[in-house]
Image 1 (cartoon, rainbow, N blue to C red):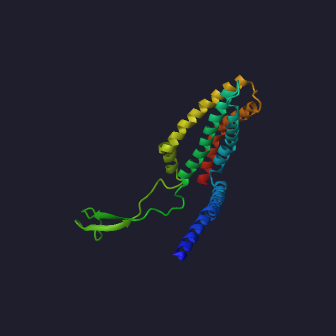
Image 2 (cartoon, rainbow, N blue to C red):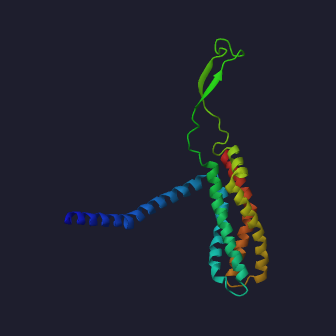
Image 3 (cartoon, helix red, strand yellow):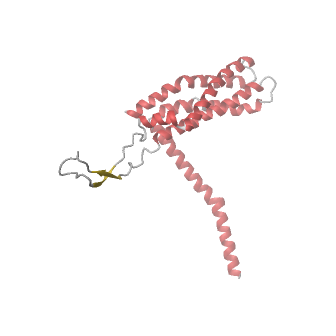
Length: 228
């Protein structure tokens, strides 16, 4: 009995140690490895110009938007702080959507070709003599042709025009464009004041309008790199 109790206690302690100490270390190792692999793939991807513009011009609005939470209750600055906070959420959507779009376009790049399938052919009077006899059934293997393989123009068209996730992002992007216009009015209202909120709002607006101007060009450059 005592041996059973001691063994059970030992197993319990070992399990707690694995959960408290070992599991977090393994999780950290996996996360770090996945992060490094993701960064490497992004740097070597044809979509690097698109990702660079997206992340380079949306990180600052996210950071400044989170910092503006402390100004929500400040008299005369609440509306500007509210704009900054919502703008941070929309900027984060831009970054997540860019990763989603790139993933959807290139997701089966390393997958094997479509498997061969059995096809049935029936002989007819029009068949070549000596090869196909009328009324005879022939079975042979064929490989389906997939014109929407990863990184193809058909795949790009499908993702941009028919993907539900991209459709939702387009709606969010339209809201973001309207929100940038609203931000100009609110920035003029505070006149660059409200302490650090004013300069941060100006930088966020510059990043937003710059992203609006450059993202299309960056995406087209990425598509050109994709086809080289």
